Length: 116
Image 1 (cartoon, rainbow, N blue to C red):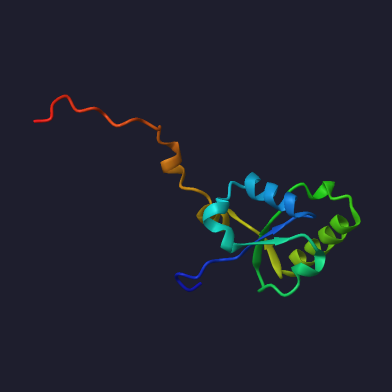
Image 2 (cartoon, rainbow, N blue to C red):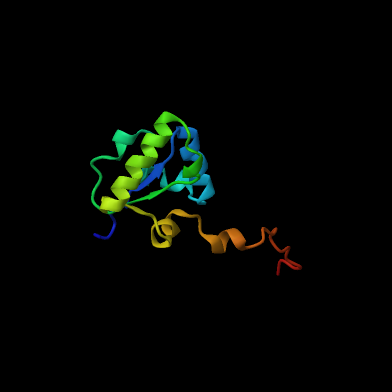
């Protein structure tokens, strides 16, 4: 991959609100990386992506609507053919907030005893 080129991550779910919940579930920083995410809620929207494009999804076994079932079947076929692939940690880590900064305790500035 060329340096400086942002990778696209597909967020697949039967509705936009479920896409948003999926983003939250995987801890993706939406404010910082919204431009790298593509929300897919219809089967035909899965067609045309570059081979090996990563995706995230969750609770596929609960997609019981007609659209959800069609989306699941299309996702399965495209994953099996290698057109799409399940996102790995190397895809997700750059999209998450910096854990070191988030883990540091929030503290107030230390008051100075003397001002010299």
